[in-house]
Amino acid sequence: MTLSIHNAMWPGLVGKGDEEGQEPPISLDRMLELTAAAEVNGQKFDGVDYFLFLPHTDPQADDDELRRIADRIAQFGFRVGSLVAPIWPGTVGDSAMGTQEQRDRFLDAVRLACRIAKVFNDHGVRQYGVIRIDSAEFGVEAWRQDPAGNTKKIADTFREAAKIAADHGERLAAEGEICWAGMHSWKDMLNLLEEVGMPDALGFQADLAHTYLYLLGYNAPEHALVQDGYTEDEFYAAYETMTDKLRPWTIDFHVAQNDGEVHGAGSHDKTGKHCPADDPRGKLDIVRCAGYWLKDYPERGIRHICWDGCMFPNATLENPDTWNTILDVMIRVRDAHAVD
Image 1 (cartoon, rainbow, N blue to C red):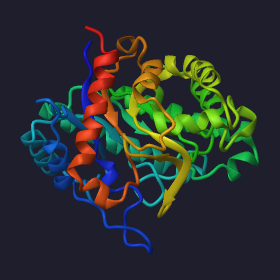
Image 2 (cartoon, one colour):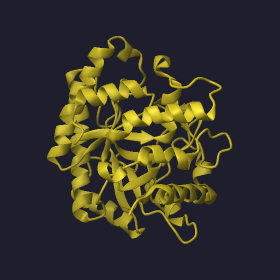
Image 3 (cartoon, one colour):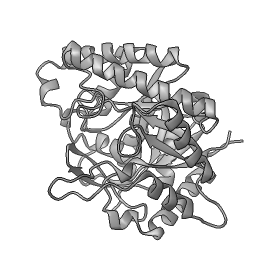
């Protein structure tokens, strides 16, 4: 099963805004234009992954408006893949380990995402992909007050969300990222997935940049698999350990680069810093590392890969060379690891 190559639309939104030090969001149309303009040896992006929130999309939009958005995406020759549910405070949802009222809002956001997914599916612009979630609990301090109890609470919320998704013919993927409570280390992420215990309905979304910080134990030193000054052999032995644990759960995959630093902007807590694909400070051999996650990918229903480069400066996003470089590395990942 070959792999389609997608670009994420949310880098035009995440960390953007009108607060001090922030840059304005980049519109959906502009993100589509930038993606469509990229070309490497006659090859182009196949589709986009998509955040279901303003200003790109009103999650309360009626079916006619959603179909117009689907038409617009299709006009660029793109398919829609994975969708990001608006589960955070300040969007539709709220913390998955909060009060019952907060957790109910989280579930409402999943219902909205499933409704939008159905419109896109019925339209025909979307034929594969998952719905992405996380715990929507910024930072880990509150979680640490009762790790076992809070993990159970998140798992209970996720389990209810997975039932909603399954009823709509969808799967949920929990994003592994150090800023989300209960998901902030590879071991805590694995514990949460096992606690939910619904692998057919809820799996893991691996991102090369975020999972690199899993190795370092940035928010959970007790789970670090490498230490500063690690050798190449130590790195790949640790990487294999981590991916062997999380790969069986992985149903969505983001190609990315990381320089070992963290970054946050606006309300988005510090997390693995995405770097340009050719950043000389990047710590990852992108193509080689991708192979650890993509091994046996057809068995887990993965049909596309997506580039994720959140919180890049707008000047970087507006530079056509950025997208050609990204597309080039995505093609190399696909060519190295896709199977017939």
